[in-house]
Image 1: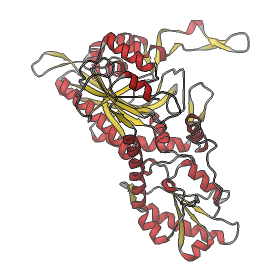
Image 2 (image 1 turned 120 degrees about the horizontal axis):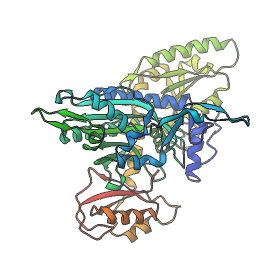
Image 3 (image 1 turned 180 degrees about the vertical axis):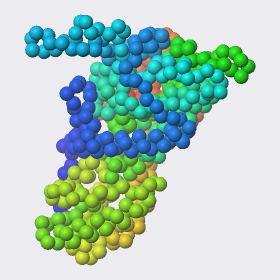
Image 4 (image 1 turned 180 degrees about the horizontal axis):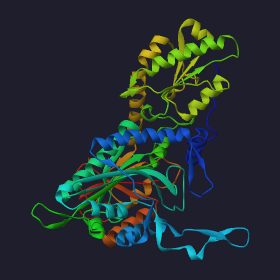
Length: 513
């Protein structure tokens, strides 16, 4: 079997950003569209999103949340009711002002001045305001609560600097929106959603994350509390992989979401919102990819196993294909990670070795190659994507009997899933530095770009107002941000790195996407 290596054109260690783009291109996940900042998600990339969506949707519905859909166009007046919310999104909003085009007399088109909308419509950047309108109609009494809704949709935020999957002008996501009788119930829902995201990231995407509360300056516009899951990428930067917000009664008061309580008085609902997006795919690439391309955790792989027959264009090909089809059916009947194994018999044209490397770059967890001699001997050659090379820097094929390949595939996929998560967790834990006691030490730690600085966990006094702005500005000078207050960090026992005052908690700081 061919041992020629078809690695990516760029290595992670040489240029991580270029490597990231190369993975997307060579794994055939997505491509640029004709609109700045928007992408075409191709079948393999969208297949990964469909798996994430399916697994997340199961978790959402298990919590009693019901799916619905709301319009992509939102009246501008809805945003104007919530001042802090509109301020947070104003620079990113795409606005529709006309409903018809006419010829401009120069061979082009222009908005028809007579077709100007009575009120501008914002292309959905998030849906709190329009869902708030619906909740105000749907909720009358405490008996209507809690109201638990979710929608899978696209949103538009006109980003200035874009990168596929990580930050695009249009992206896909889910957004949960709930209304509750009191703060206690709403905060409980906020934490439930956060835990759901942690479980999905770690159990499905094999990404190790840190859960915690965002500081005041990083809150969702209009929120009382914002909580996040933060993941460490292979270049040491942080990726905010999901957020959950307790909104208090701020949005309820703006939209008039009221209910008659158990004593007959009118009260405003306490609301929440929470969401994850196609940014998760970027996190999968930067957490698990290597210099040969993508590595997809089996739980979210569109195909977990690909069978490649070594076709010769001879009379034996028919018998070989029959043999491979029986193997495919046997593997497809097995269970891994709670579902039947997804397996593809690749009968596309081309040499098997070239097709193998296409699947390697796509990151399919297991590749099985079978030639005529293998068929005669009742064996297969199995290649694990997570352990691609042996000590001799050759493809690490394992020769297995057909019975072994079928019988062991479930446990093998589960082993790969666990191994990828453990690898990510070990890397994260090894690159969180503690014990830093001054801003000077913070600056020294992040001096230069050639190192892998990772994250810092430092103590702080929870400043606010002008004092917090000074801290944020000091961090920005080093391209740093506060990620969150880790929920499981040790209690504070010293002074604040930034203010010198007694510390009240610990925070994570890092460079981030």
